[in-house]
Amino acid sequence: MHLPEEKKLQTVWSENWQNPGFRKRFQWGLLVWILVLIAFPFFFSYIEQRVGWTPNDWLLDQLPSMDTSIPCFLVIWGMFALFFYRALYQPKMLLLFLWSFIILSLMRFCSIYLLPLEAPANLIPLRDPISNLFYGGKDAFITKDLFFSGHTSTQFLMYLCLQKRTDKILALLATFAVGTMVLLQHVHYSMDVLAAPPLTYLVYLIAKKFAKY
Image (cartoon, rainbow, N blue to C red):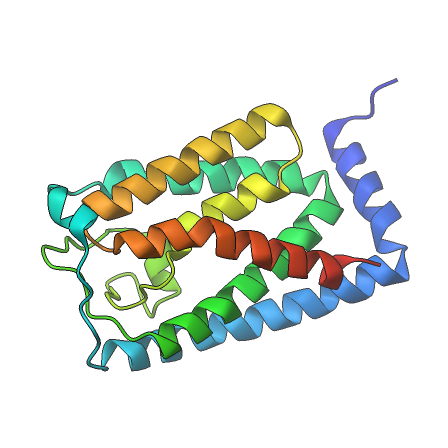
């Protein structure tokens, strides 16, 4: 007999929450995640004031500059909607994503701080009212959060965490699409996008140890 969706959701969370290992890691993860979100606008405001280096990017120079804000927004948040729908019924997957996102954010803090870059030429502001809230407001736009691409890495992280084959294919296609669109938008250098998947995979491996109980 199939349980109603609401009952199934309640059951799966109740079973996991009764496990002290899961409960402790989830509570700590939420706390650290909130602290990271609080740090976002301060960090990005700081890096925006710095003078950075402008790398030579042959690939980016060959690409036209175009506004992909709408399709990029739809792909990013469409994948987030799918991911969190799946994660509601798979608390362990949500826990893994939570710790992966925390470590990914901390790694990007370090890489952006250690490698100050100027914004690419012909940059077109990427309009995303949801993401901008974490940068300091819906009208905030940060141009120097460059190495490595958070947009691309987050999509790839969902690919790594999702379980169903069709979901993973969609997430992998979304990774490629978002990576392409941020280059066409000229909001990232090609090295930012190309480095995102391998660095995200490293983050994923580390996060698995934090999420293990």
